Image (cartoon, rainbow, N blue to C red; front, side, top):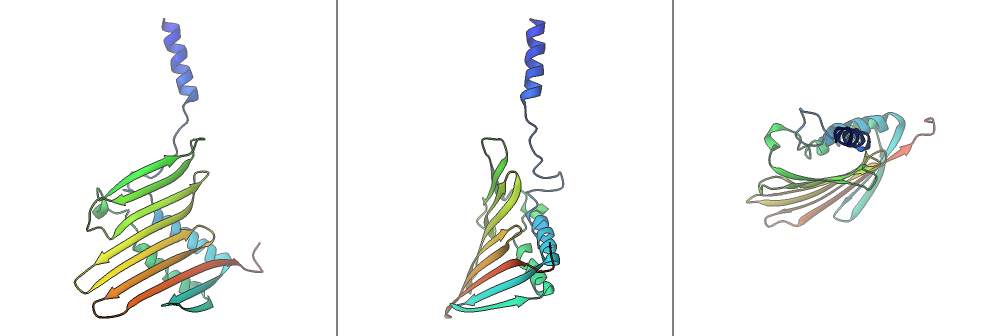
Length: 185
């Protein structure tokens, strides 16, 4: 009987796959903003940036400087829920694929006062590939809805709808794409 217990214990140790560490002790949620900041800075160093902005359907496309794209980083700082004030305000759900690789982490606000209503991080073979977040806010004078989407190594989209009392609704659609420079390899 002792041998069966020993054999079963050894088999369990061998067959168990170590789960990837999703976040460190100092993190309350997956460190999305840190990854976006690192990826954006990395891509700005070796790619050109094309930005299209549509305001109420009127489109404007331009090549922008790295510093202008870095200003957009402030917009992504808004979706950073990884701070002590957000602890306990979101329910998380983690999905793994059949191979055991991390596939998706979804955070859903459980507090109606939370500006970020939902955030989903999609993974490709355990590596972050796409982040989507929805932000909603409402006050006595306006309503705001924003969708953020950051695709690592590709670019990002920010869609905003804002309605002020007694004013027309404003729709802003920003699409930024990293375009490989001719001198990068």
